[in-house]
Image 1: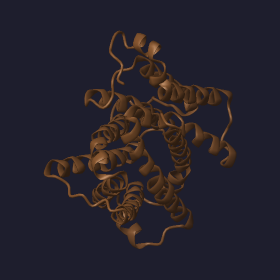
Image 2: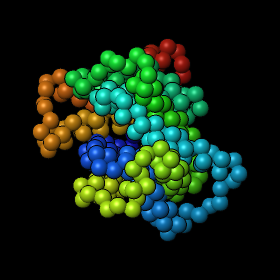
Image 3: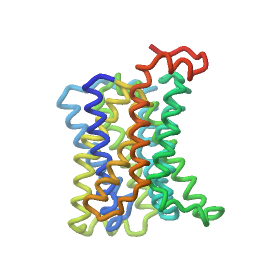
Image 4: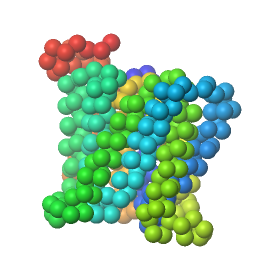
Length: 313
């Protein structure tokens, strides 16, 4: 990975690590799906304007239009809708471990399946190491009791699907980013996906219609603005660029760094506990990200770990 992409990766981890607090503040006061939908629609409109100003106006072919719609639904609507719905029935720590652990694993799996990645045993080991670190990080809040049946179990499945949906859409998006530009793809996917998510919110969330015409509390507005500017305009755009330039597995390793940043922010500014096991978990997650990002620089070990599978060059 080039120094420029390392810098982008660091910014992405920092920004998306800090968005957790903004999301928490917002969904406590505004229906979650509505909060996400309006954020994505606003960011999409701005990104489309930027793409237009940059001259990114190439017409989409028929097949690419269909792929764009699928990508938008997978990355936005079918990710954030089930995620927020499922979090109503699953403890937040459990939800975080499931969603963040599955994201990089699913990105690697779909990348290999769709020909965007080649199997690398060392990178796969890093994914498992990071998943273990996540479990340590959120250990006190993991609660699997009562999830055997009913809505809690369906919620758990919905959260797992959110990670899979996002990863699937991300891998499918890579060819489109190369052809039509990261700003335009970021704008179109967030605008289309956010619009469908808004329709779903109006149909499902009982308070969504009222919340559209009622002024929000200033905390929700501040969190929404932070998510639009930093989470979407900056973070989502960088993520799209990393997908194109580094591949799904490397781009997806943000999921091992941003939760550690989120916890550090919580410890520093929200009086969250600073237990030893959480810092051990953070260390394992950062190590996993370093291994994942540097795996291609260790060809001898990568080849051994891949059990004879040729390394992509």
